[in-house]
Image 1: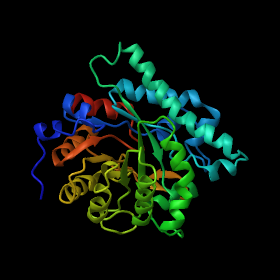
Image 2 (image 1 turned 60 degrees about the horizontal axis):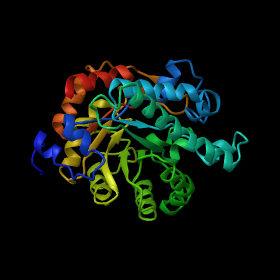
Image 3 (image 1 turned 90 degrees about the horizontal axis):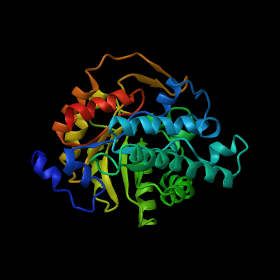
Length: 325
């Protein structure tokens, strides 16, 4: 088992690591919170297979506004609105490949514009390191809009998943984003396909986060520690962890990752509510501890980067910054 993380060991990340400036400054990388559910809370209609990508078509300024609020809350990384933006999804709306590609690039541009505007307003960051923008590489299951990203019961094998991801992956790698956020990955086949795409895109750096069903297993039922070791060994993977997973499982999953890889651990769970992928509704609200209190436990367990996923807010991110920096 690796030794416990300390402020000194975290601050000694290699200088070229994207997380190094943030960890050296405050011992933690703060990722933003939910985008789609925050857009919904501000009046956007997400009742569509495109989900948050619909807002790219109808209210792009609202996306920029949400990103801006997360930067103002203290986020070091914003994740662009490309999670459910796919060529297939846009084609179903009658949008051709060239226009779909332009919309995906626009999503990254909106996050970059929000970052640059915040830097200008704050006088260059007010002592903070320049925030990063990560392009979301959502899983194949998200494009199906049936909750498959929380089950991993795909009909495509690894080779087919690689081909499904290939064009969008290359586009996002060249979009101007600082990083790729390969997130909510529910099965090993999709993780392996992404590693092969990284091999073919040597300039790209990415994190890979899985959706998990319990303290030990990702959504497909495969062991998280086995897959964390696999993806953590890839030289272009800068972090490994979980997202859109119930907070109750996160501490155990962090500790599992720490036993099998030296790659930094990143976690951005959901609020603790349950999402029904068929009805596309959140159900069975769970009363959790304050988000910053849970984040402290995750940091103490060994997470280097912490943020929030569905149903978390700029206020949650601000609370992490206030209590853990």
